[in-house]
Amino acid sequence: MSLLGKIFRCDCPVTSALDIVGDKWTLVVIKLMLLEQKKTFKEFSESDESIAPSILSNRLKTLEKTGFILKVKPQDNQKTNHYFLTEKGLSLTPIVIELALWSHHNIKPIDDLELLKVKNKQKVHQILVERYQSKTVTL
Image (cartoon, rainbow, N blue to C red; front, side):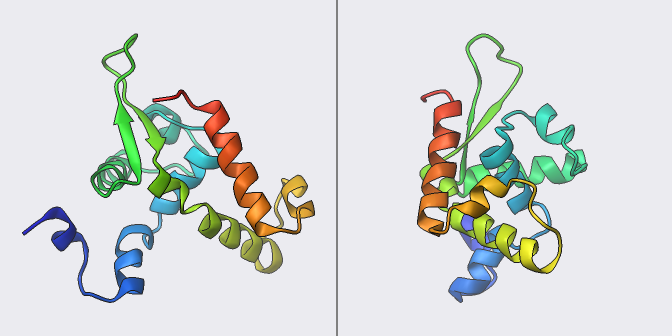
């Protein structure tokens, strides 16, 4: 059985998506990468979210195996891994935006009001992706 067969419990597209991004931590890792430019295990571990090392390790491995992130060893430090969002990972940006907006209106206001001023969600998506890409090393 392939890795993807082990991840997905059925053929339903919604259930399959939730099998990857529906746990408590996966979208947090994506958010840390996209919005806070975190890229190392240490940076993720030291974030305000306090992700347990075993859970973080598991999520990073799953995201890498499913093609949402890419793991790279920098030439200047072969002991450290840097993680980068792939196009597939960046395609989760609209979900992060929607969750942030939903939370803003229903749970906790967003601190970054600049993005709220942009009325077009596609434009917010473009801004976030361009901001992320401009701050990451070209692979």
